[in-house]
Image (cartoon, rainbow, N blue to C red; front, side):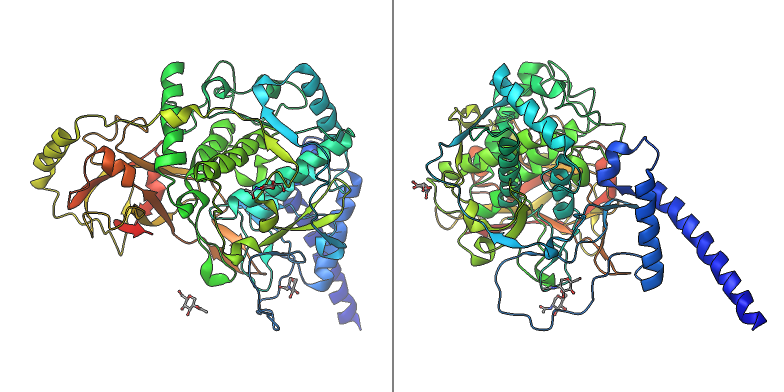
Length: 587
Ligand SMILES: *[C@@H]1O[C@H](CO)[C@@H](O)[C@H](O)[C@H]1NC(C)=O
Ligand SMILES: *[C@@H]1O[C@H](CO)[C@@H](O)[C@H](O)[C@H]1NC(C)=O
Ligand SMILES: *[C@@H]1O[C@H](CO)[C@@H](O)[C@H](O)[C@H]1NC(C)=O
C-alpha cells in the first residue's frame, strides 16, 4: 500500500515535470502558424489551455508525437484514378530542417460536409485580372478594404487570411497524406503545380470579392515579364499589402526584379537586367518549353512508387527564383516568400501567382489551346477548398482548365519576351573549334556519368555528352538534356545553370543561346513526417531541358557530342551532387 502511494507520488511528479517541460519545448520550438501575428505577445491563457489539453490527451492516449496516421495500406482500395488528399490525415510537417509546423485546419476537413464544385453563373460578367502597377486608386481602395476584412477574420473562419496562407503550407509541406496510401501529397515540382495554385487563388479572389460584396472584384497580376512591370508594384509598399519579412535590398524602388535570381546580386543596370529577364522568359516559355512535360512538370500519379520530382520551366524560375528574391535575406530560409510554409503570408504572393497562372494560359495559347494533358490521373485529381460561403468544395483539375468557365480572364497584353530570342555568345563554328582544341587533350576521358557516388557541384563542371542519334528523327521530336540524380544533401536553396558548347559559361547568361536552362530548389524540409515515428528522406530529382532550338541556334545538329557545363550559383552547389548527364528524345 505504502509502495503504491509512493509510486503514485513519483508518477504524479514525473507527469507534472513532463507537462511543464513539454509546454516550454512546444512553445519555443514550434510555431502554430496562425499564432504568428501574436508572436511577440505573451502566449494567451486560452492557448496555454489548449496546449495543456493537448498534452494531457496525448499522455492519456499515447499519441504524443504526431497526429496518428496508421501505417497499413487502406484495406479496401477501390479502383481509382488521380490524386487527392486524405482529409483526416492532416499532421505536423517540417517547414524547414528541424522546424515543425502545424498548418492544419482547427477542425478536420473530413468532419465537414463537402459539396462538389459548380461553375459560377456564366451571366455574371468576367472578372478581369489586370496589371497591378496600373491599377487606380479606386481599385486599391477596394482591395485594401477586402484584405483588411480578411485579415481581421478569426483563424477558425476558413476565409481568414491566416487560413488562406496555411492552405499553401498544408499542401506544400506534405501535411496531408494521399488518399488510400500513406504517401504524402505535395503540389510542387510536378504537373499539379499550375492547377492547384489556380484553385487556391480562384477561391481567394472570390472570398475577397464577397467580403466587400463586389462581384467585379478581381486579383491583379505582377507583370514581371514585361519591362514596365518588373519593379515591385507600388501597392505592396502600403498597408495592408506590406510584409515585414521581405528583402530590403530587392523590394524597393526602382530596383528591377532579377527573375532568374542566382542568390547573388546581379548588379546590372536596369536596362541590362530587363533584357536579360526578357531573354530568360523567352527561354522558359518558348525554346525550353516545347513539350508538355517540360512546361507542366513531371507525371505525378497515386501511390508511393510514382512520386515524381521534376518541375517545369516556369515553376523553377521565375517562380522559385522570384520567391527567393522577395524573401528576407536575414532569415536563413528567406521567409516569408522564399520558403513554402510561409510564402502565402505575403500579400504579394497572390499577385506573383496570378502572373504564373496567366502565363500558363499564354503558353497554352501559343500552342493553339491544345489540351495540355488528357491523362485521367491528372484530370481527375481533386482537392478541397473553402469557398466564399465557407463551404468545403471538392474541385477537380478538369474543372479549372478553362478560365472563362471559372468567370475570370486576364487583360490582353503583349508578350515582349516573344521577340527576345537569345543569340550565340560567339560564332558557333569558332566556339566549337576552340572547345575541341581546349578539351581534347585532357577532358575526353571524363565520362558524363558520375555514378555511383555522384559529383558534387562545388565548382563548374564541363563534360562531353554523347548524342545517341546525331540528328533528330522526326520534326516533332525534342532533344532533351537530362541532368539526373540531383541530390540535395542539406536542405537549403540550390541553383545551378546548364550551358551547351559555351567557351566560358561563367561569363554568359540566358541572353545567350548556349544557356540550356536552370535548376532552382527551395528548402522544403528534407524529412517529411509521414506516420508516427516514420520519416521519409526526399528522393533525388531530375532536370529535363529541351535543347532542339538551342542546337539549331548553335548549328550543332550534326555533332556527335556536346560540351555541357554545369554552373553552380551563389555557393549553393556544395550541398548538391549529380549522378550524370545524358541525352534523350521526347516524342
Ligand atoms: C485517411 O487517414 C485516416 C487517419 O489517418 C485513416 O484512418 C484512413 O484509413 C485514411 N483513409 C484513406 C481513404 O486513405
Ligand atoms: C516500388 O519500388 C521499389 C524500389 O524501387 C520496388 O522494389 C518495388 O517492387 C516497387 N513496388 C511496386 C508495387 O511497384
Ligand atoms: C471555354 O469556355 C467558354 C465558355 O463556356 C467557351 O466558349 C470556350 O470555347 C471554352 N474554351 C475552350 C478552349 O474550350
